[in-house]
Image 1 (cartoon, chains in turn blue, purple):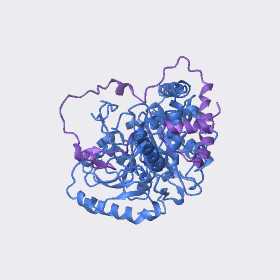
Image 2: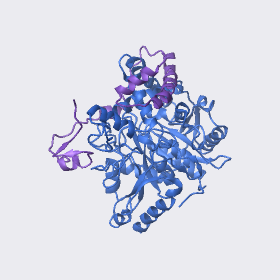
Image 3: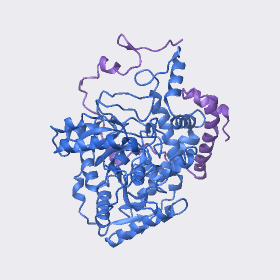
Image 4: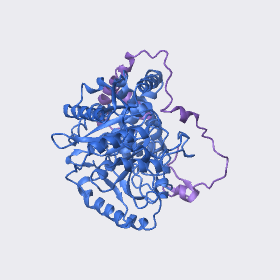
Length: 457
Length: 98
């Protein structure tokens, strides 16, 4: 049985790749591996973002500088999936080094949105989102540094979870911004998110930032009982810059929760408006340091015709990195450079504290907060490529979760008049994944999202 | 503070990027715009605010991340060199340094 399931996923991935460009590598040997799979996820086909290491497959990070790199070890989350019987069917397209909100920064071309192939999939984990939305796989992994799981999930009409910082191991995830990165899960069904999170979560000796906090049985929280749960509604975030249809759709979700017995309370997040500024200082500073390792010496691409060492470094990086990665490395180098450190980096870390405190005090009054996931539905490919700042503002609702380290879950809640998916985001206190999954499950049980995209398996 | 093309060229050098003149022309105004945007943080008084260290949860900060000092196999020379663009005699070979 499981062999057929995996075979169908591989065939669908191959068939749809000319249209969607969701996969950078498809493993024809995957069905074979399904034969002897056993465990909690036996025979479950999974697609994996191409910045997570899987033995026997490339890890390109959507970049020419890694290209055909084949890692010698499995990421911890991958090893745990394999040990539970899941079968990785391939590596999904993404923005280069996970830097982007539209997947247009991939060196291998953008992922197309299965709902409208002239529009972006969102990013940076666009391939994973599109693969799940198109029904190629039931589950995919991505990474979320500023919204890179939740935003494409929203734009493609699937669920996307970014867990609490320290819930999942980052060992084998190619680092972008280490204090923000977290491995996340895509699925079309809350139970699948719960099942997969339960397998991959937990302490890992290879990642000192993973916490000892016990991993609960997430499936047990899917009991539909949301009576008396308090959901925070940050009125101020439903204003300027938010698409009318998205705003209305998320307000309808609030009404649905009210009729399910949840209590809606007003909350304030006074520093949320500063989140993008904080994010682009901290994320680029960390990236400029993390990406220093790509120098053409130990792995990946090396530029030719560079007879001197430093010239080789510079040429390799110049030819190997795309424009957005260079822009962020330079911004990060600038904010960390002599004389500017206190003005930018230290200042940003201080405001990060204020953003964290906003959430801690809001969560004294509620168990979760609801926001839109993305200010607009999927936009046309090419629309924002020349305006990096406009592109960054896509992450306005999601970056706060990474800065505070709290979990966030994007849940599909309808289609726009142009038949593009709209999603809402649930944010909760540290380790509140059971509450977020419970709320998602209760909502989708009451208002199932049954629409399917025109491009599908 | 205004960012000049010279600033960008200097940053590119620090970051080991060899930008062409075309790229400099595109990046300089874009980076200036982003820096201008992030300077809105100066509106906030953060005099007595501790800087956040990572996205750490209290539980994460309390987790003892030391592990037993046990010998475990390493990658080994062959595997470690397998992806090198230019490996020679058990080493990573690079162009001349001087």
